[in-house]
Length: 81
Image (cartoon, rainbow, N blue to C red; front, side, top):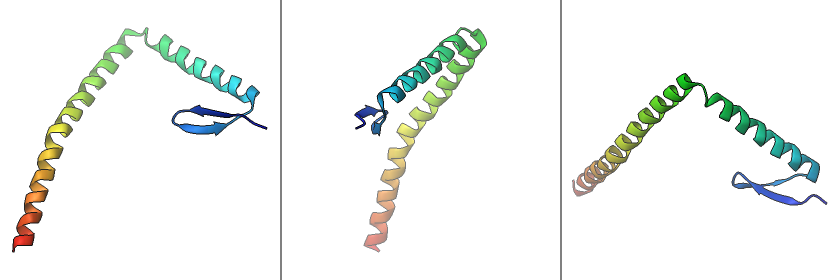
């Protein structure tokens, strides 16, 4: 009988030995990410990408409601005609 473990928003069925391998896998990914973070150029690049993605998110947050309002107004006019 394999126990049920929850991870990453979904339920997975693994044996106990497999969960140990997954934990080691996560540790290795975290260790590699931590080691890469010490390279200053990588940190600058990540900062730039986060800034760009933040601007895109803010633009989306302002433009999307306006587009939806315009779409509703257009639909209302089509119904009236």
